[in-house]
Length: 595
Image (cartoon, rainbow, N blue to C red; front, side, top):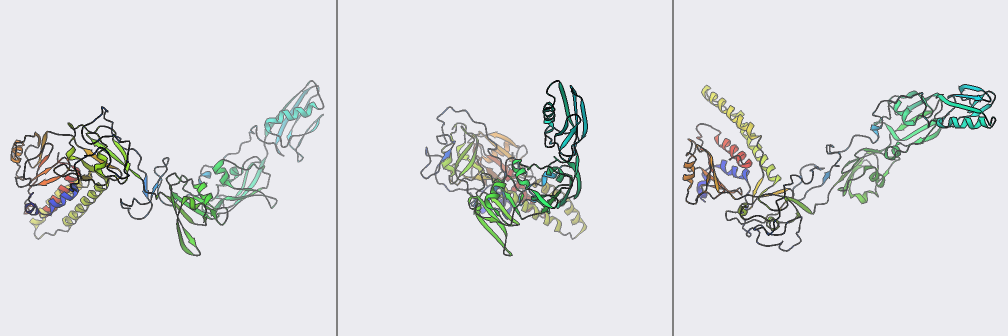
């Protein structure tokens, strides 16, 4: 290594190295020297016993598992939690992956009246209970003949000539034949046939008022439910009306109170026989408590009084198994108030109007999920303790030493990929500012800058599409492993051994060349057709399979290395050449585009 020569390269290549990988060269020990985990409480579940080295079993390779669990975590606080603390999270329900985070704006029960008003029919069903004013037809023949078609009178009777009044009010339509036949046979015991049928039902007018969308008089049958009449009135106004305080009045007195929550939750609705002139009154909306986060029902729940118990709220909200804690926010005595509690402690709290309860998962996971890719034998996913190190986990990965390059193991980490993405974007933004703010002294310079701007704009557009891989170098040039702590969703890559050297960059014919121990850097370049006009021997970089980068290598490449001829850019041609170089190599090295 020649640091004085690397320093003269300028900041472009140095920053390129930062975006390409974050090397860790702390030689703690050789890769996988022990058979099991060295002490501590770290354990690995679903792992293959053995060490990174010769396989002791005939197990077949297991296919990779791309995604063991769906990622539905959403942060519920401002900012981004660090990886060390994990942060409180919300796991949305599996059945509603597209739910928007944050407090709900939908009142529980509002969808009950989403459909249009139901149409009342004159055709009775067998369960209809005959009421005063309904039209009934009865015909008797045989020893005596009689026929009556008329309305049920105020006493609930239908008068049949030669037989007398028969009480039919309160009888199910399906039982009318049996009831009339029983009454007739009390007088004529033999040779009498009876046919009775309900022709149509009597219409009643019911007033619906209070906090509904279309108050007024609505027509229906006496057997229609309170939901039918509320629907005809447009439903309860979700912004002002109550779903828990609905009264049915007759002659100025309340004869039935209705709470729609039992119907919404269990389907229970009180049966009531409406009469002409009855009134349904929807009271004003009561106190509301909002629920969001790790719950099945994220709604605004109405409080049946001044306060709702936490126990009732838990029953209504249905917290998910992952919910461990609750953040309650509201107002007490005219001042903001909040409390952080567990789900168990919430059951003993009292919640008031406009309180917001956010259910979160605030228990750190005890295990992590690590994916194994590349040359391996055994499972592709391992579940381990959260404090396990890389070298410890590699003790449980079996490989074929003939195929696996155990000296070039590296990690792919999503957080590093995000960091590389930010670095590239910052460079692109800075380059755009320089491009748009550049001034021109003469017309000729302006034309040159215009041409440069078109070319640089193309680089910027392509650079924003680069997807960094987030590589973390964990072994040095001797293949010694750094026992760095693993994180959830890390991917351990074990490259396969290769006997070729890939020559790319500023060469005439980029190609793969079989490695031979006696070949120098110049020999590989010559086999690739030599340098282009922008390449020379003083701008050479070697990249190991592990991601380690070596500028001005003192020796030739190893099997599996990439030999890259870096371009030489004359600063007289481009005034912002250094920034372009920085952009090119941050993008290329992060996404491994030198192929």
